[in-house]
Image: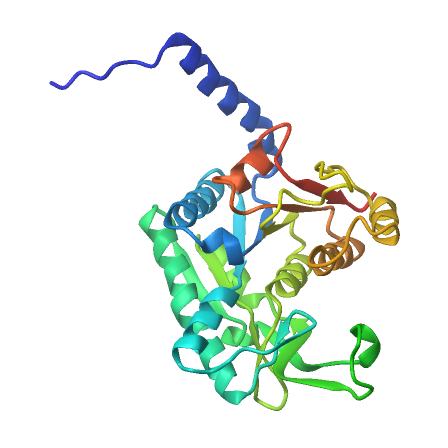
Length: 302
């Protein structure tokens, strides 16, 4: 019989403290829905992909109901490059003609979605992949940018092609899957009344799904520690009035603005908390939800 060396007493005590620290959070969030936006830099390495899948499986096993909304911008860009098609961005959004939309659907609804499903299943979960077209989950409308929304923009309305925004969410298919013990994995593709498919920002889709599901929490994974002050220190425990002040003084700017805007809208529409955290930190979701200190920025509607 193979013998196993027991952990040193100090290591065993540390493990026990971690588990006990997590207990009240597990109890508090039992049967609650947590919507997680996953994408970009959090997908870049195999280790991070496995770490994320393990986190989501553990959430489900301890009684939470995770719903994952994913992006896949780098993967879309890579395939377009291989096909000899250039990418053009306006205001951070990919101009999406019909051919590009075909690639977006292949990558988001096919390749990336099924990779996430497979990883979660590999780690003992029961994941089911969806796009916003399944079960009429995401009704979309075409997004046109007005000139005042961009700096140095032409005077006319800017047509981004098959880029959309959420018109409404029908959560029936997500609720059915959750009630059957599945973890829904959602690609942010909607369909308009014109029958066309639309590529929608994954943060916005995650926020709207969280609102409709009355989620306990919305977690937005990004490539920074969270919201940083002007000296680069992490800010936590921010309320809506704090966010307004940080936008006004320029602390929140650039690529963080759309994420914070999504968080603010979700908070104003009923969510109690939104977390913005670094998806390149292994097990970021578990550390944020189940430890006293957390690792990211917590936004509340207070």
